[in-house]
Image 1 (tube, rainbow, N blue to C red):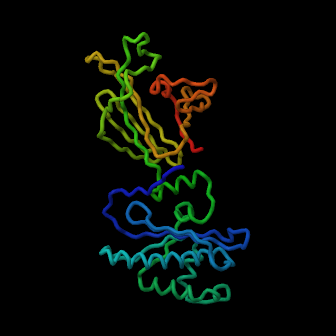
Image 2: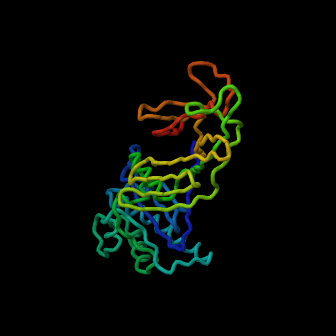
Image 3: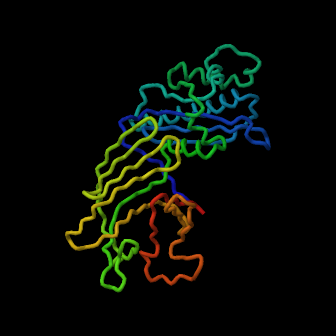
Length: 318
């Protein structure tokens, strides 16, 4: 289970923006289409809907037109709510539709036999657009956020659109260190992780960052302290994030050895399972406080659950 949340960033813009989409005859049982729409205010969506249409659309244009009518009704209601909250929309609300035929029908005053069976909706859409309350705007299919609510999508496109609507898994990262164990028979060393105690020291609670944006990759540079720095790389259209960290030289003036760790915190229910890869080989399944080959007697709850990671680590849902 993942508890996704809508992330709202600080913004001075309170422009209401809508997206409308449909899948034509997506239901194999009754050949009805599904209408989907969502509305954003600032940086994230706050209103969305996915509902099967009540009639069978005879074309993709009709299915998109019906979906747009539903979205327009929602936009008018949201505009009234925002007016009551003293957040009036001075300009018309734009609703992005990826079907040019549906937009042309809503603006074309000429009726013909292919559209006369939904004349009421046609009059309604034309009227609200003439009043300037709502405008239907064409957009590319790859930018249609409402596609999330109408049809199954490839994983890569689904993840991309999910991020664009501001829905994400909150993840926190921090660097900490344990005091190294000594004088207990087996000291900590280059290949032995044995902390003295179970309470690590956090390196920094507030970290300055520098953001560098590019056409293919964005970088976030972080300086945790004088001896720990990190670069986070987020590649366009990729599902993973790359972290490159530099640690050292570790200060030893206080005569305290330091076992440095990085900690990722997320609200994912993984049933104690995660995967690590140290040298670009296959991922190995890890289970906290468990070994598949023998009955583990947990005497080192900290050291027994840490693994060296030089290449990659992943968490999956079970």
